[in-house]
Each structure stands twice: as structure tokens, then as C-alpha cells.
Image: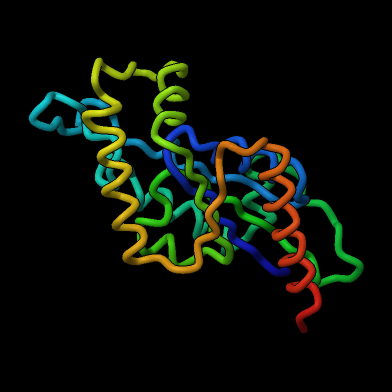
Length: 203
């Protein structure tokens, strides 16, 4: 059994979830761990001087719990799949060549060092400010974004987090989130398939 961990990160509304979910549908023996599932309760999140809740920071997330889930997958991917209601598929020509793929998706996955060190491939989806703001305004959040939240918190925190990421991470593959999802998926899925074949060819 061999494993591959793919990080699909990027800015809010950049297309990470779409790419991750589509990749999961294409790649056998894959599953997703999404960072958005690990937010702390809204009641414990601090506010800045403008009264904006501080969601866009690692401290707003149960990153230790998320890392534990990743470690659980690493120990036994087949059992992890079954726990999630997914059935492992036999896709390799011989025993020992089966490759299990974990897709980790989120906006700050590359900023958390213990998690970032585990990725075999890293993708970062980015879109321009105006596109990001338009997409964000068209989505419904719970709780909803208060007036001025995008310019007063979301975008400044994205710029801050990106600078931090670039100071600690190398080897990211940057993708243009404005491109059609089919085009993005074609690039990512081909890379992943090539990595799977490389792993199968190793003794």
C-alpha cells in the first residue's frame, strides 16, 4: 500500500472546494478532509477593533483535530475510507501497488507547519480582488458577512496569510481560479495520476 497527500489551498471563493471534490470523483481510493469542517464555535472567536469576527486565522480552527484526522488516514487509509462510507477499490495490477490519495482542502492548510510538511503536491488557487469580492458577495454564509467585512477583514487577512505562507512554503503550484473548472481539473488530475504511476513503479 502506498499513499499520496494532495493539498488544494487558496483564497476564499477561489475554487478550491470545486477542484477538490471533482478530483475526488475522478481518483479511485481518494477522500477529502476539508479545513472548513474544523472551525471553532462562533462564540469563542475574538473580534477586532471594527467588531469583525476573526475567522481568517489559524487560531479560529481546531487544527490539532484536523491533523489527527490526517494522521488517522495515514495509519490506515482503507479503514479510514470505510469509516466514511467509501469502499476501497482494487485498481493496481498487483498487491502492494495500491495507492490511496488524501485530498486536503482549505484556505490556510499551507500556513500550518505540521500539516504543510505532509503534502506531496501543493496547489494554490488564486483570483483577482474584484472577482473574489463578487463571488464572496453572491454566497450565503452562516453567520452572514456583516457590511464592510470583505474589505475590512477578509481581503487584508488573505494578503497577510499569503505573505506568511510564501515565507514558509516552497513548491506550490499556483492555479488561476478564473479559468474553467474543467481546465483546472484536467491539470490537477493529470499531475495526480502521474504521481500515482510513479509510486506504483517504485519497489
